[in-house]
Length: 384
Image (cartoon, rainbow, N blue to C red; front, side, top):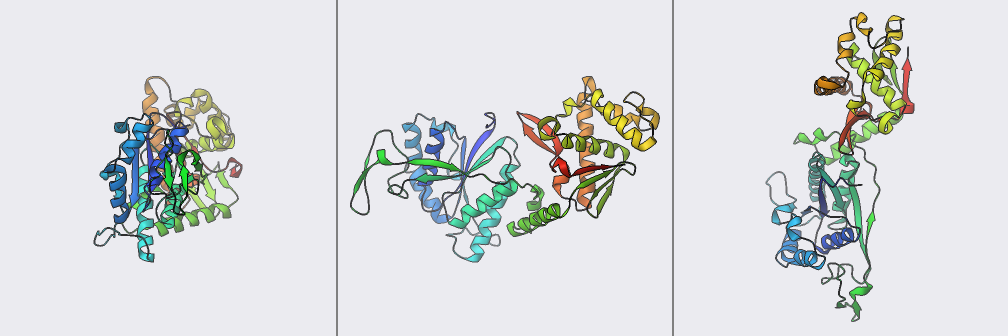
């Protein structure tokens, strides 16, 4: 279910058939789904046709009027048309035909998707129906690399007589007769327009900051992600060695401070037990009762004596445990303290080359930020 408070962006690749945009809008409208903004990635030739038909030609205005949609509610102008361009001299691509032009398109499409996925207030609906086939492939793969839980990929399906017909942009309420190339006439009542939503794997193991480096390419992001996946597949488990406060993934190890280990241990337990939303919890749910359980478990491992939340301070580690209770007037301070600890832990894991799936990360659920570890809980083992 899409969060209605978020900006809904229809992100398209398009070439010589701008119809796919209004056809996709039509299919979404039939499903009761609105769009706040349209962003189109294209070439110079594609832009000229988009402007002449959808903007100057008024096809988008006609669509909105036909179905009672406020045209001003959909942000779309020439500024929303992103032209692919060469990185060296910044000249725009006329078309995508050569190997070099395909590489340029891949890099830029991936970078555009990454930037939109950074905005937590945006939901992306990516349409791969238009443009060169490689453009659609790059858009789909970029969504797989960076897409989030609410983002979607789709392909609009139009019955053969109307597909790419220069006069067909959507199925109008009042039927219109169209001339076909073979001399036949056909009524738009016979047109079928539907949206095929394409399930996709959301990897997000390719960190968003990888594209901050101007030298980074789509190919390098894919290669880095593939290495991460191969590494994850090659290991059987994540081990938490309690006594030494170590995390071990295959041959890679990380030593944590008592505070860092306590927090990581707690979230590893949440994941193992699928607490909250499949191991992801809100910080507001971490109260003294939960902390008490973890204090007893770790005091047994560290000291051989079971100590609860109230007397854990006798271990000279208690101050940080007391400060981790998220409640009352100290709620915001405790939340910030958790985020700081997450950052320290994740930095150590990254320095040791341990992929993102083992780190503590955040997700949005029902407008709330929840935190957890994405690794399958069955792969988490606790060693004394």
